[in-house]
Image 1: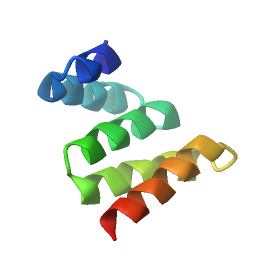
Image 2: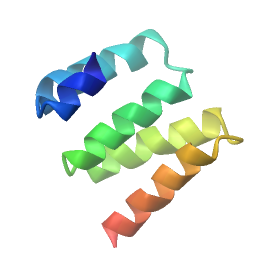
Image 3: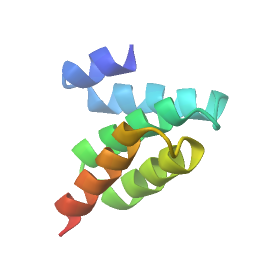
Image 4: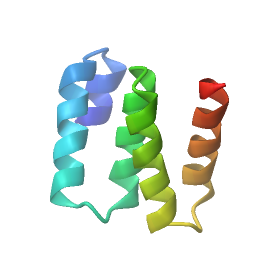
Length: 77
């Protein structure tokens, strides 16, 4: 649902859904990654970094999460 909202340009609604998913399952790196991506799309880079770092910390073996964090670092430069 949140992903479809994001694609449809309904970022505020998508963000609310991503935040709810993280609140319900704070140890789920998948949802933290998605929240981080949405925050980055909105230009909220500090908060995006915190969420992407959390995803990497929770699943260090997942290269997608590390790649997203690295991309965010490139955006911030």
